[in-house]
Image 1 (cartoon, one colour):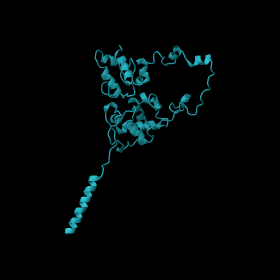
Image 2 (spheres, helix red, strand yellow):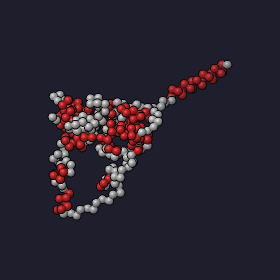
Image 3 (cartoon, rainbow, N blue to C red):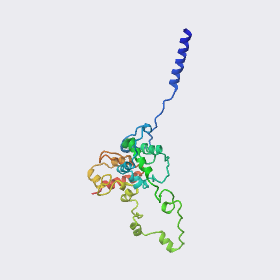
Image 4 (cartoon, rainbow, N blue to C red):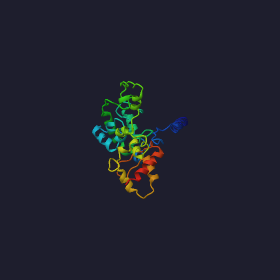
Length: 269
């Protein structure tokens, strides 16, 4: 009997030691400093294990893609604009369903906010369904540097050297303005920067788009010393002041240009 008790005690001691040395399963890390939660809402760490919706509706995903201003960065139909195309088959972080889910839910470095805390797991799956339902367009801007964005395109024949070629290669300021391109004198103006950094995807000067008109912002804060606070808000994103749709973070805008943009907005009448 004493021998049996001794054996059982030894087995129990071994089991306790095994439990104390085993490592718990770690949840995915979502607190990387280079990822910013949209609207300041942190996404849950266990989202990949949550069940998918019984039915994935691309139409619902399309409505969410628009209402969350995804097209403000990725363009209408997700073909690409300030942000990359989502329908050209090229994926930096993987194009499987789970990989696309993680990219939207937890965000990615260098400008893709984490939207999981705002739209939840079902919303992310709907967005993913919409993206996967899109056909690859005939011209994909991110396929190649070649003219037209088509990797199979043939580069144009070089223009013979001479005065005519030099004149053609250097359009006048009037020609640039007619084409909608900033002239060298205006390229550094805040009115050009707001297009350069995609602000016009959500805002206009005198009327609401997704977010408030710039003139509304100027009127709200007129006479207040808020430039530094608004610069930080534009950089980090936020929600609640102008409605429920969050403003996406803009960490890609250099500090000097960001101050110039905010100062220009606050000075509008």
